[in-house]
Length: 444
Ligand code: HAM
Image 1 (cartoon, rainbow, N blue to C red):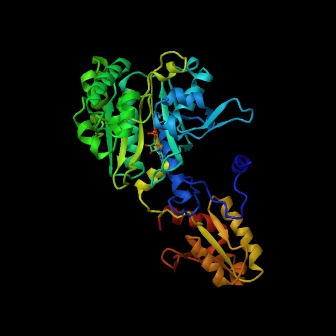
Image 2: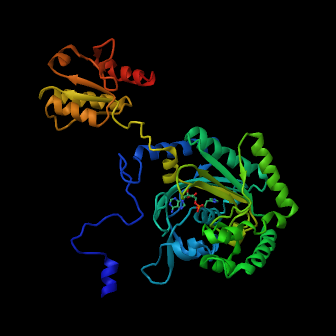
Image 3: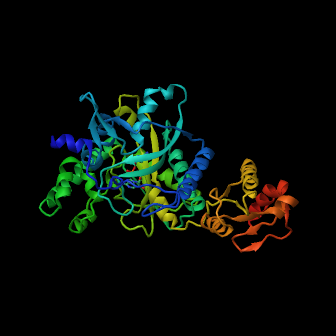
């Protein structure tokens, strides 16, 4: 009975709120989120840049069979072990999970639709909400948005470099995030990882009594994860641990060197971080993180790497691949709180008197047909209250329409940014939208 009540949800009179760690994103932004307009700007930049690099959009379901994530991300990872929203379907037989990341679903779709038989190279991008039951804090949520891309079919280091050049330019130039560093490492291939895991386990085994509880567990299941530990007492032990470099094959080493030299030729600054490991098991060779300043603990805004063994793990042929995902909330935080881009109307019409209302109604529609963001206060109160509304909506220009304007068919434009009338008025109604457009273009 109690369980049923829990499943049906609370029925008491307490107000129902959004689930903890899941945010509403409102037009004006509130609490931890930024205004919707800033989200759109970020999404627009990614869409445009992905287009330049010949990535195509793909959309996959937010729910997949739990087994997919267990196989792709790894049973021993925190994500699969502790953070997934998992449930049985109504038949009670199949287990599904809300996606904790995008790569698994994208690779599943790639294989399910035999995409490689149509084209040996696939470049796909995606965006949308992801779900992880994590400890909630600034920059870490239980529903968060990612924009990501996967390039499947190219083994050469040139694709690693192309992806990183694209991201570096996108973050710095297009989104204006200057205080960002690119950390990069290579994890080698399967055999290198095995050798390294053995070396690391041999080393950590000597310090089991001193390691934190999590690291003792990682020692058993995946010693590489210990390198990511933040507990202070583990740091001196981890700092002296053997590095992957000693276990790398010649090919893996060469691959990494080529990536680094291509990046250097494009002036992309990197910091090699030999202990960089990631929270997902599928990576090999190149892995990377873009870390932004001033964000506190959750400062990785974008991360990814190669996963050449993943398609094979899922029963397909050996297929090289690389990808990344960026956290949109964290990008917005890194871009700063500047919500200077106004989403307000380009022109706001104020009606003086009853008769001007249908006239304004018409003018607003005409302005909209010309592609302008136009509005009026449909409650049509006093001129003062309409002006207040124009102001509150951050309107750029205001046109006040009364008997005189209607009879001469022209109106003055008030530039709300400077609080003055635009020179050269009054402007005929027929040319008003073009005039506003021109003023906006001139940046006046
Ligand atoms: P990830 O490192 O788990 O990689 O996540 C990528 C980015 O998503 C992080 O750098 C961060 O910006 C954001 N992120 C992750 N968890 C949270 C959270 N709880 N709250 C807010 N933001 C978060 C992946 O997901 C891989 N699928 C990336 C990839 C694609 N690798 C290859 N292809």
